[in-house]
Image (cartoon, rainbow, N blue to C red; front, side):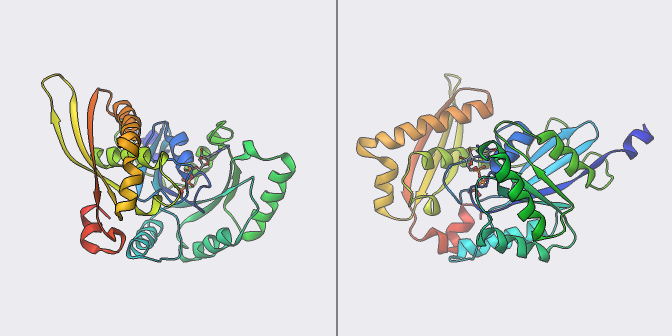
Amino acid sequence: MMNEEQNLRAGFVSFVGRPNVGKSTLTNALVGEKVAITSPKPQTTRRAIRGIVHREDGQLIIVDTPGIHRPRTLLGERLNALVEATLGDVDVIGFCVPANEKLGPGDRFINDRLEDFPRAKKVAILTKVDEASKTEIIDQLTRLGELREWDAIVPISAVTDEQLDVLSDVLLCMMPHSPMLYESDQTTDENEDDRIAELIREATLEGAREELPHSLAASVDDREEREDGLLAIYGSIYVERDSQKGIVIGKGGSQLRSSGERARHEIEKLLGRRVFLSLRVKVMKEWQRDPKALGKLGF
Ligand SMILES: Nc1nc2c(ncn2[C@@H]2O[C@H](COP(=O)(O)OP(=O)(O)OP(=O)(O)O)[C@@H](O)[C@H]2O)c(=O)[nH]1
């Protein structure tokens, strides 16, 4: 028993990179359950969500951070502070770059910031290799190699599962010797209401126009066991302007009905039971700049 314990490794890893490079999808693929929101629209990951990869030889605890970018609002500043606090504390930082796009100033900006976290090992992860040709992959690996002295460089695809086992091995090797840090049935330590709120937010975004992502938030306000066996969940969607409220609700409420359907479906999968979901859309002017509103929404 003693010997077995001594061989275990466990620690924290965070994936960073430009919006849309596949950080959330990678987290989900490694953890094997939907814990971080994925969305085709950029800059939608707002909360540090943890997913845990359980292995016989240890645990990888994934801390999913919002993207690193220049702050323009109070929300932006708080997100950056969150990124700093998170990255200052992890064992490994996985820098994600897509194989099918050229390295750009955004990637270089983030790569330069990695200097601020000397404690963490740094792994370059080339994502979406299923969407790139062999030559593109080789070119990109060469360019990545020129950025810095990486502890490892791993090409992967979270969609075709290519090399995910290799990435998991590489990351675990870099973790400190440690007993398991979480129970084996735990895949995330995020509060269940927060996960439900993320699902509502994600479903709302799916049907929304481009201008919405930055000004949309969701919360779970109440839940209630109903006599018919359904769990009633009452949630709110917050927008900044009346015009956005119109977009979220749609003509005759059609938009809200279909995003509510999608959200309910995902929530039922998460909870493993049938749910009645009631959503209200509220206007909270300038919530991204208002400390009180941010506090209320958990930022
Ligand atoms: N083909 C392919 N598409 C991928 C892969 N990983 C992610 N995607 C797609 O890329 C888009 C962005 O993925 P996300 O995981 O949301 O990206 P992210 O980096 O978490 O984005 P933010 O939350 O905006 O920071 C989604 O449409 C994914 O389906 C992959 O390995 N292959």
